[in-house]
Structures are given as structure tokens and as C-alpha cells.
Length: 114
Length: 111
Image (cartoon, rainbow over all chains, first blue to last red):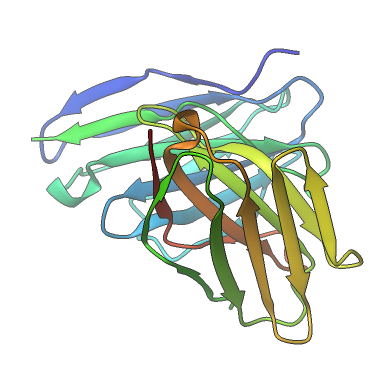
């Protein structure tokens, strides 16, 4: 099975712009979670989607949003970019999205905000 | 919500020695504890996991132990090799399907 894929791998944006990141889960996986990884804060949970519905949300401002499509692919959007949004954005997929399902991570999208 | 603490933040060992990384969690309802290895420029990769109905699990040179009473779990790597050098993360999953990660341990295996 192919693993979790994320596109693009690298992005450079300027403050005030918006960005859309894409994640394709492992075939058959219905849950997709997004994380922000920074050197200072580690891995922080953004949100989780299951069957096109946002099921969990972390403590991030409304500028961070996401959605999931019927084929389980997911996108996250960040509007009005700030310098502090520079980070590695990771998505992870799991089969049924239960608390004991293993999450498998993609390689991440490295976002740099100038 | 859940709070996961991980120690140490950095660890250096000689090749062939053992490495131990410890994590504690706060929510007694957490029931799944995976460990991930992240190499430079890559996403975290699952290396071993344990569920709350099990006290210990082993996979070749890697083992994880779980003490539910004390709310801590540990990763043990024996016979370390240079390719074990990476950042290791522990995590805990609560009944709300949300994962909480430790802050990571940078392991260096010195040849």
C-alpha cells in the first residue's frame, strides 16, 4: 500500500497570503489528522476529520481550517499568514479513527513565511 | 486534556549500549501509547505501540513498557546502532481520538 502523501513538500509565502496544503491518506483510511511541528512547540494537534466531518479541533486560531473530501483526501488552509506560521505541517491517517487506531504520518509540508 | 511529558530531551549513548526514554501522562482514560521515530527531513514513523491492556511489548531490539498505575511508559532500545540516531516521540491517545505528543528525545548513537 502506498503511504500517506502530502503536497507540496515545500512552500514559501509572504505574510498576509493564504496557503492550501493537501494530504492523501493510505487507501482505506477514513480519518485524517493535521499537526503543526515547530522546534519550540513540538507536535501540536490542529484538527481531525473523519468521513468528511471535523471531529476534533486543537487550540489554533480560526485562520487555520480544513476539510475532507468523500475520497478521504484532506486539505488544510491557513489564511492571513504570519511569520509564526512557519513550520512543518504533518498529516496522519488511520483506519477508523478510534482511540486505539495507529496513525501513520506523511512526510510533511515545510511552510516558510517571509 | 491530556498532558504528556518526555525525558530526557537529549540522549547520547555508545554504539551497542542501551537507550531508555521515559514518558508520563496525566489522563487515566488514555488507552493507546505509540512511539515514533523521526529522521531529519521526514515525517514520524511508528516503531512500536502498546495498548492499555498490555504491560510490555517487544519487537527485536525495541521494547515498550507501560505502568498504568503510575501513568508512565518507556521505550527501551538495546544494542544501539548509529542508524538508531533520530528524534523519538511518545504519544498518548485518549478516548476522544486525539493524540498528545511528548516534546521529543534526540538520540545520538556514537560509533
